[in-house]
Length: 583
Image 1 (tube, rainbow, N blue to C red):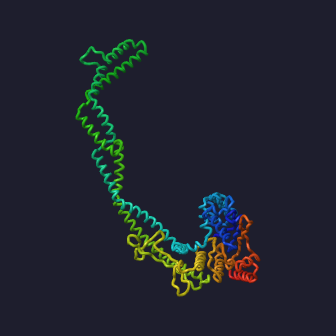
Image 2: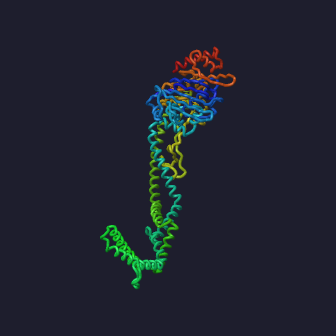
Image 3: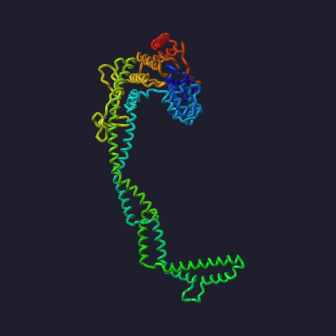
């Protein structure tokens, strides 16, 4: 077993405690005092050190902050040490240094191994370091969910294996059911969406628009609408460039350029520069001839047919109808059609998807039924062993005739479709299976087993919880246990047996107990007392280790309220002797 020891804790300016040092050794440590406030502060401090909720009210009036520091001896192989090192912390000679600071304004900071860390990390480490139990934990044990968790923890891998598979199938069933519900409950909306998409696609398909067709038609409409002006302009330009065949005396650009070329051609051999200019004029003549030819062809080809213009405008109107509904231009319309076709295919496939999901849901329900049955069988087997072990522990805690048992049951589902089949019945189920687990107690022969919430007194409940933890210590040990007055409501012989069982638990784990009972404190390996002092202005508390005569005096005070009572001292010495002999 990996040993984890809460070695030392320092507390400054926390409530009534100021500059206190609590040294916690391996084995069984008892913490006592005249009043509960100081001892509760020790528990509160440990809670803060282990990631508990911070409250500015914990800071002593006049102080800037409350600080709790702890030195915890850990094995480098422990999961707590590994997790701390992952966060950047370093071990100090095999010890993990943890601190928690709460300012007067309520801000909280945490440090582990010299590294600032989120407070949540302290809680993660606490899960592997310490099990804290108090009166509130007893109340927690009354809840069926907590009892099921306790049974599952005791059962170990026998339940953990099928429970892991069950949880995975349960999560998948929830996801499948949610998607199936969405598909079926929104069937009308999805059908309406499909109809709209189908109508739009049919409308676009009927028009058969082509990419860029709207721009081409706009240009053609512009040309056809001004055909006469374009033809007149083209004819005039052609006449200016090439002349008019019916006016041989007219001057045109082509003739002028030809004359210029002839004037230079005769003397070009005398000057290369002039020859170059002659060549350029020749090129101009060729260009003018080409342009004149194209102008003649343009005028001849120009279509001024009003019927064609009407057809173009009609086509443009049809395309404009599409662009008003589906996009700014035909490119957008075609893109909308592509997206909508894909969406329509998805919607049209809903029926197939619903069929697939329904089949998967039914298969998952069947699988969950088998896994739930496996969980029930494993829990039933573990429950018998767990109940026998706790019953045996209760016999050692002055409850020799008490018997503990578990009631494992399932609740039938109101509708077959709402449950899973377990044992031939449709039963309700949840994330942890179909079982309802309840811890029962028969305190004496002849008494029927009743839920511990109804059948156990406060003292009996304390002993049941202690018995459960002792059983856990053998099956799933926790390195350190902190009990805060879990012996409340217990006295006499039962208190002696509680102390004896705590001492037994301390053989395999570190045990820290805040107690009012001398019978319990006598069994401790180390006895600490919280003492208060008051200077008239500020109340402070300190922690003192009791040894030898001091311990006898403290036990005498706890027994009779009188440290110097001879009868109380004799009883205290007898308690210590009994504890030493009974360990």
